[in-house]
Length: 255
Image (cartoon, rainbow, N blue to C red; front, side, top):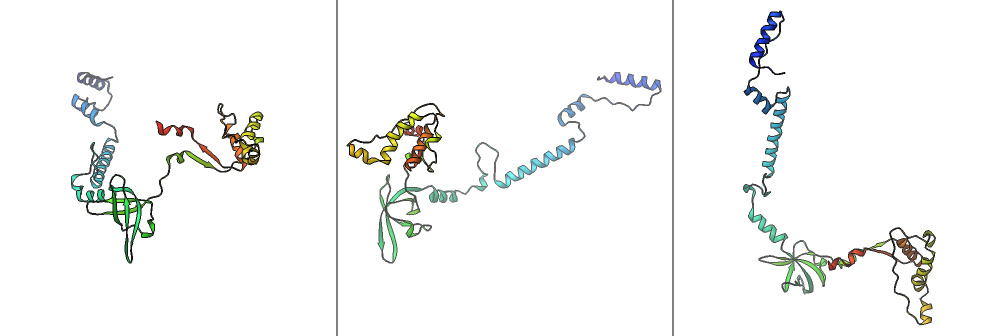
C-alpha cells in the first residue's frame, strides 16, 4: 500500500519509539516515478539498454555500407548512383528482340553475315556477338538480337518455340495396370475393349467389313470409380502410350 510523505514520517517515528532499528524509507516523488516508467527500474536495465544501442548502431552501419535506405522507394543513396553504367546495362541486356535467322551469307575467309527478320521492324544484315560461335547459328533458327543505338547483332541462339497446348499434356511411363485390377466394371471393360482395343490390335477386321473404327469414347462418373485406371489398362494391353491431359487447360486460352 502506498503512503504519502507525511504517513511515512509518522510510521518512522512510531517505529523508533518501539525500539526497532529499520532503514530510512525515502519516498519517490512524481519525477522519479515518471523516470522509472520511461526507462524501467530492473536490475538488468543498463545491460539490456547497452545491448539494444549496440545492435541499433551495428544495423545502421550495415545499412550504410550496403547502400540500403529505410524509405518507401528502396533506392540506394545518391552517392552510389551510376547512370552511365545503368544505361550500358539497359542497352546490353534489355534491348534484345526475338528474331529469326532467315539466311546466312558466307564471305569466304571473312566472318559470315546473317539476315535476321524481326516482326515489328524489318530484315537486317547483322554480325555475331562476341559470345556466339558461328556453328551455333543455323537458318530458320530463333535468335536474340541486340537492338542498340550503334549496332545490331545476334547475342544468343534461342530454342524452338513450343506450342502452349503441348505443355498441358504429360506423357507417363507405360502403365502395368491390367483389366483384372479394375473391379466392378465388367460391362464397361467389354465395351471399351470392343471400341478402343479392337481397332488398335485388329484393324484388318474393320477393313474387311468396310466400316470406319470408332474415334474414341467418353468415360464419365464421380472420382474413384476407375475411369483413369481403365484407360491405363487399355494402354497396357495395346502397348500404347498413356498421355495425361488436364481438361481445364483446353478452355484456358478462351478465358
